[in-house]
Image: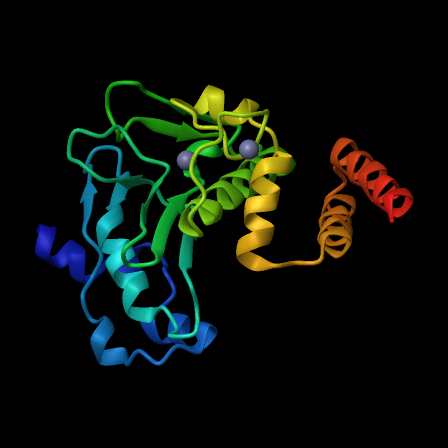
Length: 226
Ligand SMILES: [Zn+2]
Ligand SMILES: [Zn+2]
């Protein structure tokens, strides 16, 4: 199959939602015609693995970003890269476009991959969904905060700590430190007890005992503080 043909068949081959399905879900003003450009990707014939070029995803997100949003983030289970020399990337923010695209693929707890070739990876069918969900949530919070203007945190154990590799990433805190929480509050102006209550409900629903207990304690402290 020629690269051109592969490109045309990309959405069909990998069962991606069609542009009009995405438009409908987002209720965005972009027209279907403006979304005809396909995503750039690279494909390894032998392994049949592929990676999507992150910038092409971000340009796509920019097109469908509704006017009344401050940013739009895309998350995918497909693997991503930026430069040809990359093994993979977790994602890329384009702050000037107000968009970011991220992949949770390499965060899979049962993924074995080569440190040399991007196309050499194998995912076990047995999956620890909870660990994958928690890692993905942490990535989502970290990157959303970046898009909202928060930099890496040097102060405390924090979801906004910078990391050089996945192992470091996985050790990071699930929560923001008080300094970054205050920054986020100044940007978004949320109700703090309400935020913690929503977070607690999320962790209870996903059977994360440690996080639920911590949030319960914080909520109690807040009650006493008031
Ligand atoms: Zn970061
Ligand atoms: Zn912090």
